[in-house]
Image (cartoon, rainbow, N blue to C red; front, side, top):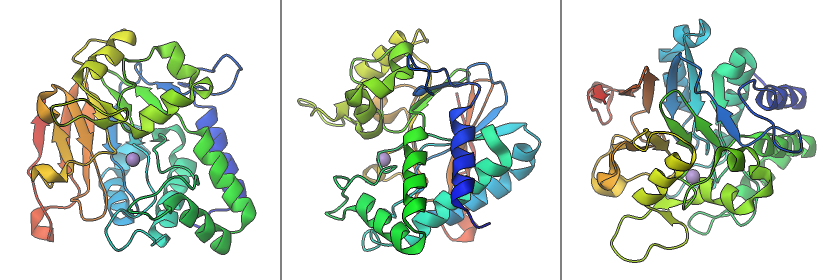
Length: 304
Ligand SMILES: [Mn+2]
């Protein structure tokens, strides 16, 4: 499906008018999606970074459930920008993923949710291995789609929510705000550049010693849940920070460095298309690609 500027406007309208999105004090769509009353199955997909095949496989495997409204999909942001060494300037797959997401939102409306990641920007300060991927994607779109399309994409980025409270779980792109944040602060995140930055950039503090300002630890997770009036052991799901260095190649890391119910999920190129399904407090790991199809395999496991 080819995506027009008008289509992107429709996508933005759907995102901004989500009935589970409380308005901020200026009457604009807030930074929080409150899905705590939604009882259907959540399908959670981590950062794709151009992994168009993974996205298509996962949607195909769950198409019936999404179509019938039995399940809804959450994509954790960072759909664009190939993260594979030697391919970081490749932007074809970035556009493919974003247009696929637009087309899914146009088809399934609020049953497809995309939250903001640190790559969901044209900001020139965004650089990976010295490559300004935000700027490169913008230039690619200027060349291939034109100025108005770039403006529409930017508007899409700005329209995205930052945090989801689900039915017994929470999700954000990168990590908690250090020291936590309240519901009201999340709704009014437009006024708080620091919180917007932290939710899409924070990384887990993995080693002993003083954490840097971009890092969070278990304390911050518990504090965030506490300030949201949620049980302190509520599953806290993020993407952003794949832990390939641990030797686990599945793209799903649970109870990371001993933090109970903290889950990182990452679905980039080369991963076995991992995703989570969450229903009634049960979190399952599923892999779109099995070992006999040529890549890493971990059998379906039950979590919690
Ligand atoms: Mn990220």
